[in-house]
Amino acid sequence: MVINRVGPLSAAKVVGLLYAILGLAMGAIFSLAAALGGFGAGRGDAGSLFGAAAVVFFPVAYGVVGFLMTLIITWLYNGLARLVGGIEIDLR
View 1 (cartoon, rainbow, N blue to C red):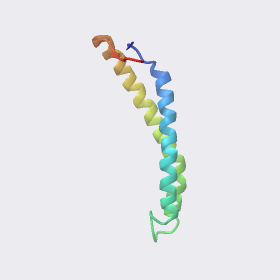
View 2 (view 1 turned 180 degrees about the horizontal axis):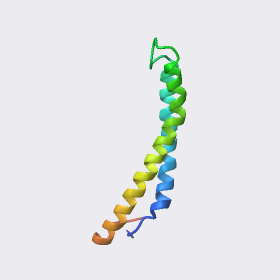
View 3 (view 1 turned 60 degrees about the vertical axis):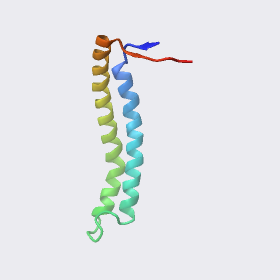
View 4 (view 1 turned 30 degrees about the vertical axis):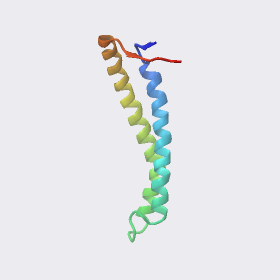
């Protein structure tokens, strides 16, 4: 079996969602660190504001970057696969 083409939009949607989930996990970690005083200690509410924003910002940023990078990578793969014949996979 040889993979000759990958659907760029379908792959980008799946990977974008996977990165958004990863971003949610990272946002939760940053939020927890901010709640424990790890960011902006002694600077008022800046740390807690950063923590709350991280839960929204990280999933959106990771999702968008993951989507766009996968779109570019699949486009490049499809072009290169035409030149060299794709990736051969042995499924048993």
